[in-house]
Image (tube, rainbow, N blue to C red; front, top):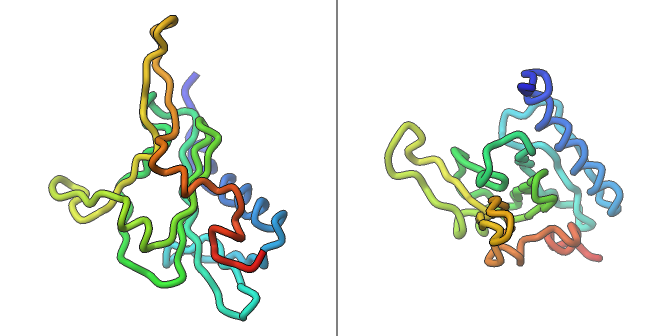
Length: 158
């Protein structure tokens, strides 16, 4: 059965609220802008009164095998106090990176329609030797970005 537009269009917003709920559960002081003109889905106030901006990106289960944690065609220039949260529904993983960390890890498209935009691929694909079915796994090189504790990742007092 094909995925309805309503389901796919609302997926990103549902995950934004899911992640914001997790941040609130961890005790973060979270604000949600009414308009997303500057690629900001949430704002967190730190104990010193300063703020960090957060962009939430999500991938669902209904995408092709191998792309479960591929985040592509992202326009991004370095920004202070700016973080990405990447969520893969299929892998049940979430990675948090600062703007600077993202720019160190991503690739920038050199050709094609998305020239100048960036991409990051948190997963690899393997084939099960017994069943011969492909499956995805999170790449170890990104383990340091896994979101085990948001306060630590956002460099907030614990």
